[in-house]
Length: 399
Image (cartoon, rainbow, N blue to C red):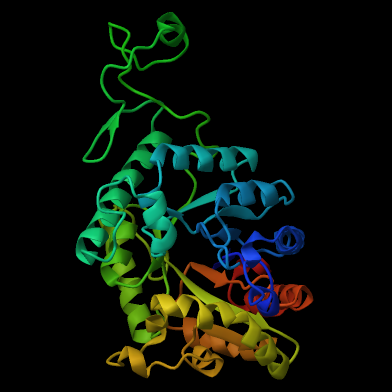
């Protein structure tokens, strides 16, 4: 099992967030950068797989303030030696796909092959609709929600196709619904320069193909993930494209069905996987010296889920078969009982892990990490205890 951290990230603790506009405060942002550096360097030598940032914009309130994951990846990548860096993930419907391909390739070069890539369709309409308004169907998610969802799906699919072409070929062309790369009739004055040192021109000197530079350090490209899948169809489709799906449901029966869906997807991709390979799941983790101490820390750590993510309907992921959404509790005891949160002393967490993964093993575990909401010393203690006393029982990466 590979274990990585998923950081929103958050600027400020609860008290500072409620003071208002924490996301715009330089003092809090600077403190966050210092704490993230210490966190990354702590994780670097302990056996953890990677550090992942979400992509969200316009987060003036202070949570999910990761408007450019690539910059944070490079910032921490240059301060670490082993751990990987990436995003979970770039919201493709709002992007120019060539810029995404270039940014990830640069992170991969600057970290000498320690980048990974994540791609998502996006749920936060406040920024997605603003940034993606020039794509048909993206500006309005109220008038016709089904058309909005379909537009996001189409753009995601085409943008992903372009990114893979850019990574997989020295030069390429693309003709789709939303993009023509390159568009026709581009005159290129330095024709001799490109004919002698490059490629992509026809006999008249017009541009027929393009390529990104640099290409990725890893070939053909970095590991790819798709967070956070809820349906079996999404899991299967991601795997069929060679992308590791990252699930988020917690009911053991639903998790089991998603592991089976991933196997079907990888088989369609032409790859044989053992059950649990080629799939990841996202969870929270709080480890402390005692169960009581961990419960106290968890109340702060789960604030972002209880007060923010659950408002997007995410609490459905801890629902059980046949349970209505309004019947699902939204509190720390329920998160622990339903296996969204592993919480306690090392011994307690080991028992929780055994219950969760004995029948449903996974290759990747991504840990939601409430930076700044939890005191830095408690966060680092949790990371160290987990690496030394929990994960060695479940993963050879920590032995």
